[in-house]
Image (tube, rainbow, N blue to C red):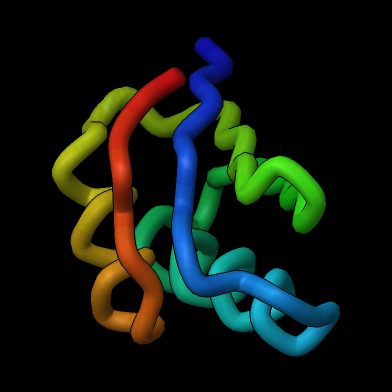
Length: 67
């Protein structure tokens, strides 16, 4: 299953890398794609929205919700 979330506060490649790494650390089987322009993070192979939210927030960014 694939879901896309809006995340605020990402402005560079380092930001997208931090978010991607945080989600993969929380869910090792996750596939993560980040689109900086829209502040979108697409995650596959993770069914737990709360897990994604915690990972994003722990990385220092604002989890807005699923789009």
